[in-house]
Image (cartoon, rainbow, N blue to C red; front, side, top):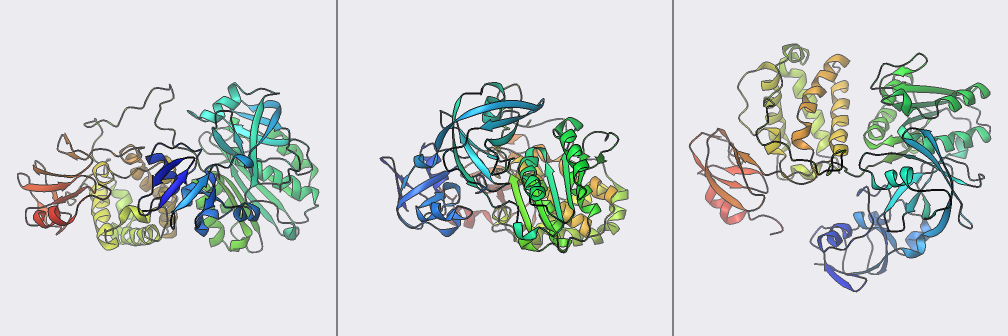
Length: 531
C-alpha cells in the first residue's frame, strides 16, 4: 500500500483509493467540494513521488510543473510526500456586495497583483477558517474588480456566509484562475449557442460581453433558465443588451412555474435545443447544474456540434442532504412507511412501449451507456448487463401492468449500500431521458416514465448506506448473516426462486442473498472487501 506523508503524518492508502479518501479515512481534513475534479478546491502539491496524469487534468501548465494535483483524482502510483497549496492563495479585499435578487448577490473583489484571466474562467474563494468554494467570473479581464455571482444554497456553508455575513472591506483569499470554458477568439464569425441555469449565467455573461466587445459578427443566442421567474436575476439588463446589439438574442426560460409573457415555458436545454436542431459550425457554451450540462453536451453533439466547439462549466454541488432546511439532522427514510411498493399501474404507458418491445430497446440502450460510463459503471461490478436488463424489464412490467412477475428486491434494498447523491441520481435520469427520446416515445409518455423513477428517489439517494431490510428486520452493514426468509426473493448466485421459510446466507455489504445450495461456497470464498 502506498505511504503518503503529509505535514508530519503517515497515511497508508488502500488499493485504488484516492488521496482525498485516504486522508479523510485517517482524520486528515483538507478542503474539497465536488469530488470529481471540476472545482479544484482539493488541490495539493506533490513534493515527492509520481503523480498520475489524470490528477493534473485541467490544471494550468505552470501548476503541473510545480507538482500540483487534485487529491480527489489522484490514486497514488507509489509513495508520496504531499504539502498543502498555501502559496496558491493570496489575500485580497471585498470591494462591494449587491443583491441582484433575493437569493443571488454580486460580489466585487479587489484583484491580486498580476491577476490575469479569460472571460468565463473561475476562481476559488477561501474563508479565514479554510472553507473553500469555486465561483465563476462574470466580468471581463479589463474590468478592474473581479465579479462573482453567488446564489444561496440551502445548507450551503459558504454561500450563506457570503450573503449573510461577508461585508465590504473584509479580507478573503483567492486562487486561480482555472477552467477552459472561455471565449474562443477564432470563432468570431461562428454562431454561438449559450445555455445556462441559475448562476451558470455568470461565466456566460463574461463570454457574451467579450464576444460583443470583440465585435462578434454571427448570431449569439443566450438561454437562461430558472424554476421561478425571480431566478432570472439579470432579466432586465439582458433585455437592454439585446436592444443594443442586433446579433444578440436573449431567451429567458421558466420550468417550474407558469411562464410570464415574454418568457419560454420549459427546461432551458429543452427549449434551446428544440429551437436549434442543426448546430454544425456553432460554438456551444453550457454552464450551470451538472445534470443539465451533461444532457446538453450530448444534445449538442447529436445536432452536429464539433467536440472542440462544445465548452462547458458544470456546477457540481456538495451533498447538503445531511441536514434539513431547519438545520436539524435529516431523519433516515422510514423502514415501514406508508408508501406503496409500486406506483399505480399505467396500461397506457405499457401500450406506448409496445407491450415491452420498445422497453427492451430502451433498457438495452440505457445499460449500454451505463456500463461504459465512468460515474455509473462501478456500481454494477460483478453483475452481467443482460441479467440487469432482464430484472429491470420485469420490475417495470410489474409496475405498468400490475402482473406479479418480479421476485427481486425493491429499489431500497437493491441500492442499500450505494452512496448516491441527488446529482448522480439526476445524471442517471438524464441518460434515461436521452434513451426514451431516442426510442421515439412521445414527450407525455417520457415524462410518465420518468415519474416512475422519481417515485423511488428517496429510496436510492443517500449520504451513507442503508441497512438492508429482510421483512421488517434491518440487517447490519458488514459481514455475513444467516436467516430464514419470510418473503420470497431470488438467489443472487444461481437465480432460482427462494421461497418464504427457506434458510439463506446474506452478504450484508454486497446486498446478495445465497440460497441453501449456494451458501457454503460463498461463506468461504467471498469475504467483504476492506475488512
